Picture 1 (cartoon, rainbow, N blue to C red):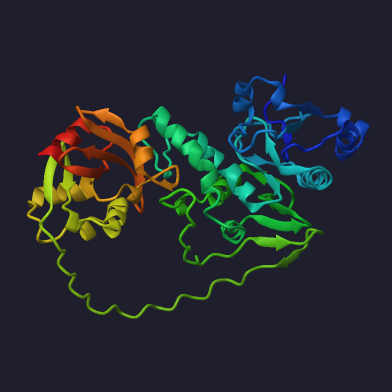
Picture 2 (tube, rainbow, N blue to C red):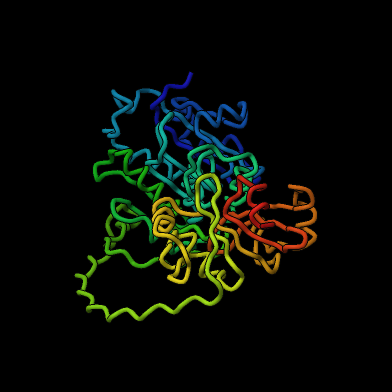
Length: 412
């Protein structure tokens, strides 16, 4: 039996890493030290067991092995609900780093069995630091591909789409951007080719709440690109102090200077009058008690899509749109769905690639007679429903769960 709240040293090895028993035992500190620990090979268990203990899929790729070294000589806390672990974990951190130096480890971690969050992370690639933090997003059945939480669980297709996007998300930030997001309260150092991150206090104790904050920073879901895999937009510098960096001996090598006092911004000039939108006014319809905006071709482009994604209704609606005050209030309060014409299939994406006609023909499904539909990704907005309506053309809509009703609106 495994005791919850035991200290776990978790090693995930590189693909097809050659491991022999002697090298492994030497890395653990010799035969006597190895006898004092429990070694668990999750790949020898039912995969569902690993999901309960400590999930590693889809982080680990095919052929990558994992070893969990469990010290259950005593629990880390008297009360497992206490977020403060008053044990000096510095020796365990150094032991983890030593193992990663000697073994072909892709990612090493130090955590408490049965608890989410890591005290120490050791990697050779900063993307792996972000990848392990993004597992919570990837495995949560109520969070979609864009990082938005749903009131209900994702469909099977939506969940599979998110898993497919997992690897692409890792390409959106480079090492510099990932490490810059660590923030205060996190210690970062380089040991040769190893990147070492921890949230330990100066005395080696561990506040697990800091681990959850670290996970959020590394995951950087607020920087998700609208198209998974596309480079993330630059982030404005925040007036916070950077994480403390240390050298291989644990001494501080410097801290970023505190942000300079903000200079009061000059008074803004009088706002220029926004230009009237080109094209006819928007038409609205009702669907399920909500408002649907019907865009003519002249009123829809990528900038409008971005404004819709941000729910910036002031940038979408115009005085020329003959909407009652009640409808405008409802839109600002509850939001609105929308339908817009689409000229080219290549304007939308599937699996990170522009949609082609053969791909659409092969994957679209029929609805309401001869109308064909397919869920796709629209740049600067997110998931939409693509409709090909004979005699009317192609349309995209933010409303994806009432296909037949949207088709009826398009047909007029």
